[in-house]
Length: 436
Image 1 (cartoon, rainbow, N blue to C red):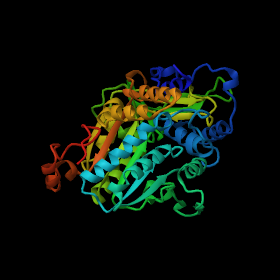
Image 2: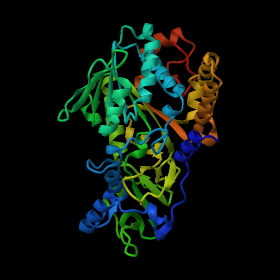
Image 3: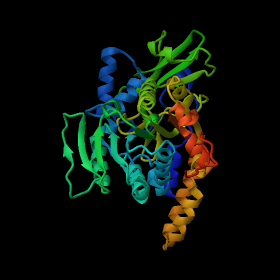
Image 4: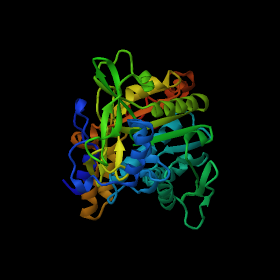
């Protein structure tokens, strides 16, 4: 197994079971348990106000404006803390680009659309999708396309601009504006940066969230004889400069997010994910388009998935906060509930199924036939294995989509349905891809 594969498998790793009432964060080597600026900040906060929720801990560690992990780190790629699918193989982004074009065509070829990516990483995925848009220029030539990136990290937004924009046209910057950066892509498409989805203009849009929801803050709950109790982060009284998990002595407000018929004894809930799903659903119901969500996750079956990554290795979540990525698997059953019937939802389906339906095998053969160097062929095959192998990302990664109800059931699709053997309700990836 090469280094790239080992790192991505670690990112997908299954965490240990919940540790019960002991709640020690583990026995880490002394050198890894150093006092970071974020740890000092958190200890001051806890001493002032008492134990904090896991959600507040995640939010502070990842997005604190002064010390947050995402705000100041380039955490992706070989030198970062984890590697994502777009960094593994260009095929991944190309097939997602085809998905958006397929949905645009099937839904009536709107004269304009926005491509909105939440948490664009290094910009690799949007870059691969834009390459597909350029290759299908004859299909999209009458469509006015714009790119809108939702990114809180100044460091990453600068990297995205380097990857995506035309060097000869300088990027406009205005830190005080809702649109804090503007530019033009190498293919001539306008691109804008925002800190919040709510700031993105409303209109016919395709939304993409790849490994975005898994870093949103989660509240963790343990079932006890006294009922549900929230897991909190406190200072360890036995060890100076160390944090530990404790249980809240009584019910907390976030308990309202737990289902009344919940059967698991430990659950994670993510109110921020619910808010974003409701915003996406409202937008798609009002102005059309679709959302494609791809992430590590489950359909309401897993319990403790909260974990950390540093240098491509699993990392104790309470050790040296601010130096490692924190993540929790997405509960797709919760996302489905948060849609509240405003739009239709599809999935989750496993990544290997989605990509096979999108034609990954055909695309791999084309690229292998074009590859002259043996090293390039090896890289393509290793990337394919990483994406599709059930023991790697093939089954651990899932796709989930939001679409207008009329896209699946409406009479507006009758004309397209008559022209194709594919029923109007067929959606690429969740069914076989068939060009209209």
